[in-house]
Length: 220
Image (tube, rainbow, N blue to C red; front, side, top):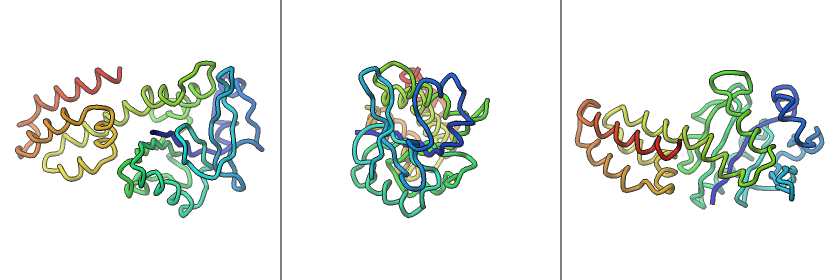
């Protein structure tokens, strides 16, 4: 089971998202996550349109919008529950928001966080996610995971591999756990066997290239 969690607020949706995306759904300030109702599950109707349904937790598989100023304690409870279940959780948080630093999420092994923004250019991950959420097609969760988050997961793991002598950090990383659950455990462990026997990245450069090509080929 997996879930996508988007830390957001109505102002970012209303002023930071293109009108072409916003006009597809009827999300107003009352239905959007806020201080009083900080969690909304994205529920698909018969036309594959998303309705925001207030919920108390992240217990079910799916996509969620979470108020980006939810308290640190409340957010920890939500993510601790996901971690206990060892379920893949992909989180997009505002780079300049209330919960805005990567290290705040380092306590969880099965939670993959990424800091994004609404502005044009590098780091604008909110727009492609909401583009899928609001379109008229189905299978939104898997499409978001595969097209937006998996390339980030692959990049995160392969980039970490460029630094030698970090095996413990690698096998404890969310990207390792997620890639293993995606069916790449044998390939990752075979690479790590070579990796941990080397003192410099040049010694395993060819192995890294093969792994990188394999993972990128699947995500493309």
